[in-house]
Amino acid sequence: MVYSKKPLVGIIMGSSSDSRIMQGASEILDEFKIKHEDQIVSAHRTPARLTEYAKHAEKMGFKIIIAGAGGAAHLPGMIASHTIIPVIGVPILVYNDKHTKKTDASKFSAFGGLDSLLSITEMPSGSPVVSVGINKAGNAGIYAMKILANEFPDLKKKLKQHKSDQHNSVMKESEQLKKEGLSKFAKKNSNNLS
Ligand code: RP5
Image (cartoon, rainbow, N blue to C red; front, top):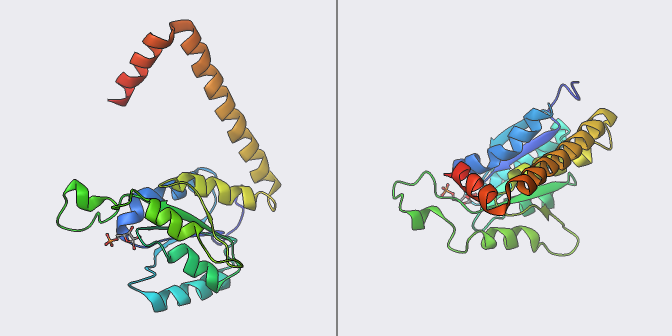
C-alpha cells in the first residue's frame, strides 16, 4: 500500500559522516514503504539553512522529522525550536568519518556518544525533543511509524505483525538454546559474529 505520494518523514543529519548510521532509519522506513526525504543540514556549519529547512519541512507537510547528529548535537533541538513537527533525535557515536586522519581515536566522539545524547535530551522546558539510544537510527524509524500508524490503519497492522515476528524469532532461538544447551549455542552464535 502507498501511504502518501509525498514524503511523510524528513530525515536529516549534521554531516555526511552520519550517513552510515542514519541509513538505519531509511532502511526500516523503506521496508514498510514509508516515503522519506533525506538531507544534510548542519546546525553549526549551515545555521541559516537550518531555519530554511524547518520552513521546508512545514511546507512539505512532514509528519515527523528524524534528526541525527554527533558531538555537540544541536540539530534536533534547533529544528524542534523552529517547528511543531515532532522531532526524534538520533545521538551518533561514530563521526569524523570523512576526515583524512583516520586513526580510531579521531573517528569517535571523545565522550562515547553521551555528549550527543545529552545535547539532544537536555532541552529546556517547553521545547522537547525525544531521543532514541546512541546510534539507534532504526529505532527512530520504528518510532516514527508508530506515530504515523495513528493515521494509517494498514501501517498499524504491519507494525503489529512486526512485533509478532520478533516474538516468534525469540521463541525459535529459545527453543534452539534449550535443545543444544547454552555452551554449544553460545559458541555457534559467537562463530556467526566473526
Ligand atoms: C556533527 O559533527 C555531525 O553530526 C557529525 O556527527 C560530527 C562530525 O562531522 P564531520 O566533521 O565529520 O563533518 O556536527
